[in-house]
Length: 263
Ligand SMILES: O=C(O)c1cc(=O)[nH]c(=O)n1[C@@H]1O[C@H](COP(=O)(O)O)[C@@H](O)[C@H]1O
Image 1 (cartoon, rainbow, N blue to C red):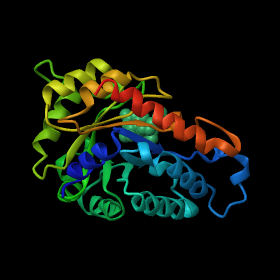
Image 2 (image 1 turned 90 degrees about the vertical axis):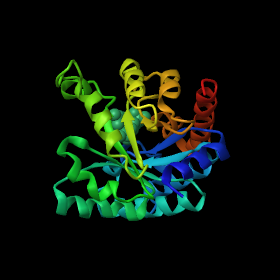
Image 3 (image 1 turned 135 degrees about the vertical axis):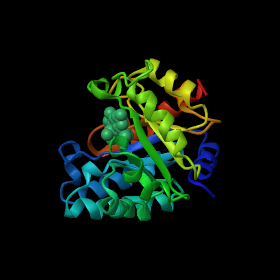
């Protein structure tokens, strides 16, 4: 089964397109977890317990795990999420020259899907794209304020770079495993990318803490019902103290319901 078939089945099973972002900023973890051997894992475990019923996937951003304990915490988190039947999308934004990219692509041995950066071109993504059973989400129009610096440059025929990336990524979809990352903070661009590539599922970050447009995220993010709308801080840091997980569960449920009203 392809990644997008598995994701579609998960979306149907939980009636949710929510991607729960597991970005456990050590500075924001509840104090009572500090004594744990791996506080990030202790935190994530309780987040997964509280949110998995509403999670179409989990999206750990590897930036929050790039140290010795972090990798251990990430490994435990992935195994636990998968044990609950939830696909894991590693947000790594990788790409490099061929022999390095082949090493980076080994990350896919441990997850169902990954985010990649198109800046280095097609060959830098080949080791990811050739993994037909894994999902590969190509950054297209990012949600940050500087996303327009390069991505909105005109590259010829009145076309912007993000539009060109969308079309090229669609050509790279030989294995049926390519999606795009398009932020909810620029709904006009989101709509435009959907016009250009009707068939690719999107990962739409930027709702919640970044204030993006949840309605547009659902209206344009899904292809044949498949796609993901991510919130990280808005879910995992919805509450504080001993009951942080309960608040996260409520936040995930609320977002799933809100998105479903537009599905
Ligand atoms: O690739 C991503 O997931 C991503 C792309 C993008 O354009 N904007 C964006 O916010 N993200 C990621 O999505 C998550 C958003 O986190 P919150 O703003 O806390 O919901 C972070 O892990 C970001 O790195």
